[in-house]
Length: 321
Image 1 (cartoon, rainbow, N blue to C red):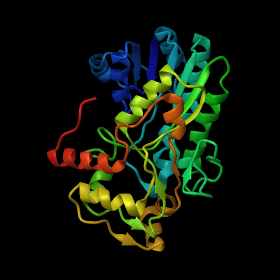
Image 2: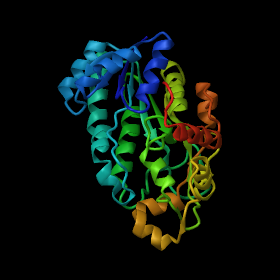
Image 3: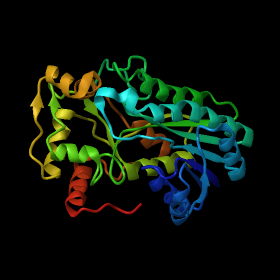
Image 4: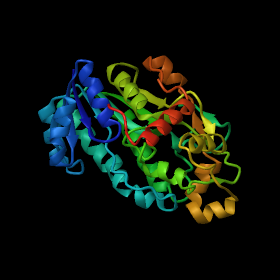
């Protein structure tokens, strides 16, 4: 099957492309940077240099690739600042709004059969129980300072699910960790935990769901090859409160235990958005993805994954795709 991966050199893309190739698919991958063409060829993909915000370039790339499936992994995430999330995510938000529209328009014109897009679990409304399913309210009450970012995620979901003439699937990934992520062996979040700059705010009751980036790629392959249109949480088996997982992460990295700060101090350090994520976030259940996609994470719990991460960080090396 011919597949176009938009954003093929990102954290998920570089894990996804070789898996699709090994499964026997013909893969075309986009990159904004001409110098990354050799890297994509090395992964087994045909490279396409595309500015995803240029509708003509997107249309030309999709027409050239003639894919049966488009996988939307476009992001431009730089260093994270929880005090200014919308500002930091502004380039990615454009890719999730304008870029999504350009991809969908080109996909319709090219007769694409299936469209798989990246989303994020953290948009669940912060009401009710600690763990959410795909049927729970999503994105209607974003934290202050995150309105544009959550709005862009909702745009992806609503546009893909409503697209005519093709099957739309949305994958709500958990928080990534592993190679080439901010929680990788040399990532910025990893370094913050090492330096005790990632405190537990308030009671640390915010529930996070994680997924190793390799497991996210495996779930994406499953969504490319099967599964009904709709939304799927792609997370591991153990949603956990910050007060539970952050000390384990620190220990795995050989760091001192994280600091604990009151919520008021947390607002000064991480802003309202960061404080809400540390104290009010809701996790996600992967039951639907397990059943409907036939997928199961190899890293069933962040506990095992963090131990692996710690070993890699101490060794100063990553893992192959």
